[in-house]
Length: 240
Image (cartoon, rainbow, N blue to C red; front, side):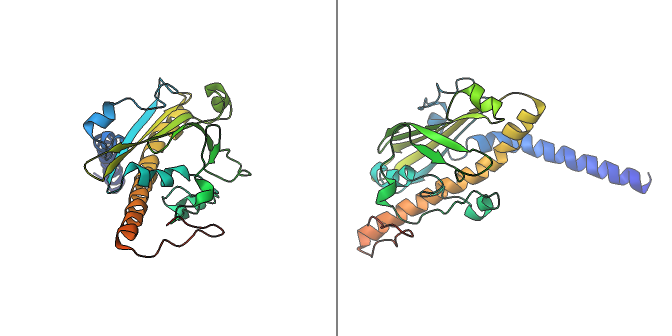
């Protein structure tokens, strides 16, 4: 076999191995951190996107109560507390995300109909959610504004993003997050909103869950040890 043939064979083997690896890993990414009972349990928002072409359920255990976890959910969003994920990566795309390290009182009053943006209001991609349900300290549901047809006409998926905080052991909780997405099943739609989205969504949401866990647990530790309160976010005061 000549050199070009060997190269083509090696490339083909590499692609096949990558494909096999994705098939093996993919189911695990979709349910990272979630307990079996959480994966199958109904959550707020399931009915908003009943026939989801993409769905994930992720979870994490936090050594803090639901009341101590909720403030970090209440201030989610660009121009607010951020997304507690990879800010630098998000900001490469002009998202203007600056994740807070403190709980800010001005960002705690979150109600139905409020916008939760992922990008600045003047960003060319109008990525935002509206609050469809806010039941402190247990449930928060964010949904795409408008109707599915509105989203599809804009070239966007129609999405529900549900957060639920459950009691777990003494003084601990489980944060479970479910994303359901529908989109036009064109080749481009499938590539962009399913196969490309899955690893990116897992990477960013995993970091978000870890970020909320770290912040909530550190705040609990500061209170229990009597240490000074966390530094305030710029222009705002922190809640000790």
